[in-house]
Length: 273
Length: 298
Image 1 (tube, chains in turn green, orange):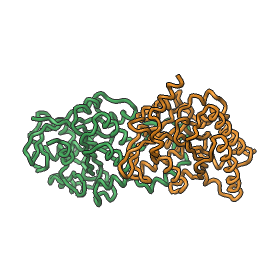
Image 2 (image 1 turned 135 degrees about the horizontal axis):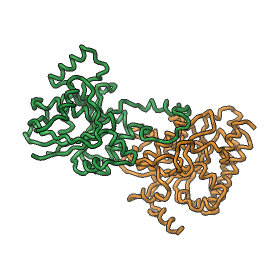
Image 3 (image 1 turned 180 degrees about the vertical axis):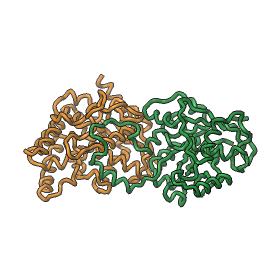
Image 4 (image 1 turned 90 degrees about the vertical axis):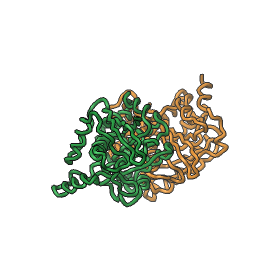
């Protein structure tokens, strides 16, 4: 069976592990009817089962902490063609990508860049708007941090620019490859389901849009809610509703210009053939 | 003489021991270099692709508002899909820009200990822009510390290694309008310092006849009373005469800007002048200018 490596990349708390958890929880029984679904259970699934268990019981998927990435290989099948694919994804901790900004690149990242066909790039940015900018600039003469702190650290960099820097690094290693950019926590983004996601990116994160459109020919934007809701806002009734949605495979969703419960869409876009 | 005026003089003359680097910095005064940080003038040739980039030098003494100006330009570019007909699509120095925004955020208006671009910090920033017609061009900005230019006023040795001003397509000279309209002594000092700088640049043949230059009076929002407006009109004339005499031609334009007001017309006009591409005549200049200069100096 052909193996397709997809680099799952994103800064800390971008939603990488939660996506894997939801993907496995939804697709492992092979009954979703989605573009990609599980063809057979892998010989060993302890790691992803643990992640999806948390997802099922509405608990935060624990953040990856291993120094080395865990390689997740899922035997999948394309529903429309029946083609079988071994989907291979690394579960890196986000700090590994964050260290790239510090000029400290893990050899594991380099190796995955070399062998991956495309990038599943996760971001968690929320909204920002040009109207906020004038207020920010007008307030810049007021001290925002302690006076003695003048050394710039990676976390001081605008979050959208941190993501552009990571994209720039990946582009330098992988060139113009297929890339799916997934904005996580889409269920909590303002007015996010009223417009095309690409238009939303143009309006809210133009620096990302401009960088991507100038460097990648084959790109697609998605809003994604792997959890389906913000757990902190759930009472028992709403929790039950969310669990009920999970049984119908309608809890996690992706969004381009309408909601789709097929969260394999970004992966299907990245897998050739 | 008031305490505030003394502070201004201290900053201009470099006698303010508290300004600049602050604490928690390494020998370069800036902490660790990050991915896509600013570059030095010796790396200018690294930016040359198939076309010669436009080189813009931002010149001014400490606390004249260069970093605030450049930080505002950067934030306008990253926050807008299209600014004045151009999209900002890439930079090899994103972090160099972020540093300037960061320093500006840490400004404290109540003290003269203004955190700013510091002596020894890399100064070359680049912007890759795409026009509405889909054509790409690159702009290089030199944003040196005011202390560097202060050294230029007193030493030929400091000036002679300069590659940026000699090769610049546009020189942007900054003047702190708030300081310039304080009292005559401060104005005289500003004139003296610029005269010293221009004289040495001219003597070292760093200012070419073909260079375009503009003057930008910053912090114009602080010059509000009729009395200070009158002073500004008078002092602008005196200062521009010094420039005309030393450079051999009048400035292309003199602007009064408030770098903290995104909608300020004059500010946006300066930004547009900076990010616009070279004309075909300018672009035809020798591609490898910096390397040629380095070879010449060897």
